[in-house]
Image 1 (spheres, one colour):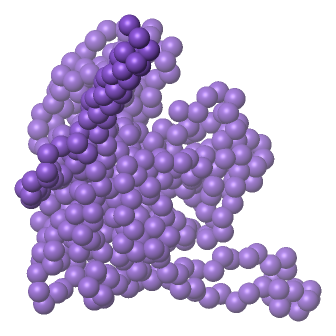
Image 2 (cartoon, one colour):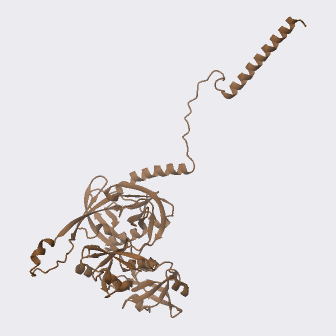
Image 3 (cartoon, helix red, strand yellow):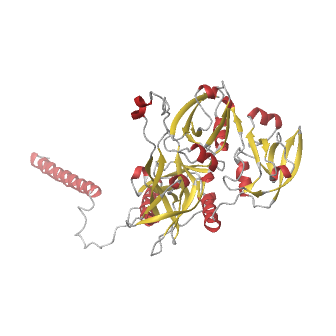
Length: 490
């Protein structure tokens, strides 16, 4: 083949190579960018895009957020804020000399005149009946001279206390309104589950209509606040001023009454179960007071070693005294008996007995199982109605450190004038005892131990019993309006 033929064949091969390369490039381009090489574009159909549906925890968070907004808007009108005015006496200061002493003139100006002071307080509450019945805490309205209830719409109504129950720290107040008020639905606190979402609405530190959220951290908490402790624990933020406000479940129902926090503890708030509050409020509205079953004994928890020796349940108690003429005495119960069962139910914790007795209908016959002299005995006891506060004899209970205390009675309030409305009254201090050396005196009122509020002798004993041997316990006392502190070693 001559040179011309070879050149022609080379040109043909080059053309074929170029065409093949262009085809391959076009194919590759269409695979990467199909829209760019598609046929002439057709008019697009207007199909609305489906909303993005979050899944898993994100979906739960979005649902919870939407629900919290709806609950806050829906339930704010059912929450009220309670302003109270109280009159408290100025502390009495003992002068070093009597007025007839020649040195009196030098100290006259140092001794302030006797006078009363007006004190203001703030709490929360929630409407349970459109007729104007409101649930709050007893300590919010205790000793209040005037009560002003503020509503969401800005109205301020005068409130009056229908009745109160010191032992559970609950009170029912009433306001008069020309129109029905928004009332919150009441749920079932027994059905509440640990881990459920809850919100709290109240006026913490005076910041009204504050909404906080959290979960139910625990149920059935016994913290020494009173003889009927059965608190709901939550990590929803609760602060001073939240007292009396509602704890609300995700269905918009009140499941608790926010009551207290533990000083020094974060995310430790406590609420009274709504089932208890509903029963107490109903009795106050219908009867004017709370009716509870009464056994008529004083008791003390058993130490763990003693429980093991007796093979008794964790809540078994030893009867320390039997009130003369009371149901227990008539049924044959004796001091020294170890009570292990109440009407067929084993006592699972220290506070089981007070709650079981209080919830028993008056006149019901119950069977008590006790251990006496190493043998089990079954006793039949007819439950009586607990006498109103102040009408039952205040039993004296001896504590370590040379202290004898009793529950606070109206007579003691008149005699000693404590600023606090609850606590355990010191009625005797042994000479030379540990309590005497710290300055504790008869007439002092113990109202706080280790930052836990003392409601009565039973709650004081519960706090002391939970402490470990060797612990230093800080007692806060009221002496005619003056706050004192004493540290005693267990």
